[in-house]
Length: 110
Image (cartoon, rainbow, N blue to C red; front, side):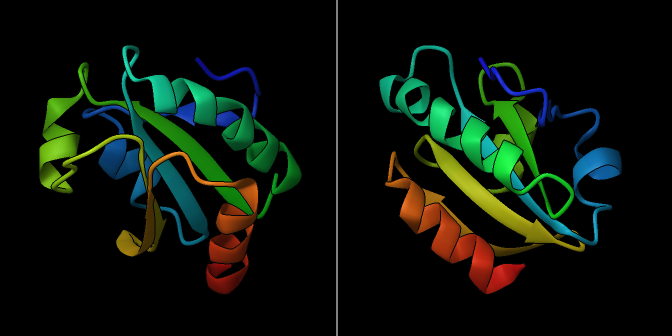
């Protein structure tokens, strides 16, 4: 679903090794193919991934294909974007919100 080469894929299998090991700010978008707001949010996440290359990593995690990760982080609604640093959740955004909201959260946590 991502169009940016800077948006990576997180899965149940690589979450610990690829996402949680990052010391830098990492965004994980919990989404599903059938989710309209998730599809609407995708271009914004692509833009953020491109604009913050080298400073923030952006991952997408399909909750239907990776239910363990969604359960682990108690994801109740999608899209939910978790902001993580050193394996800890430092912030989250739920829903298809304006890009400015994401920029504000990123700048606060970077």
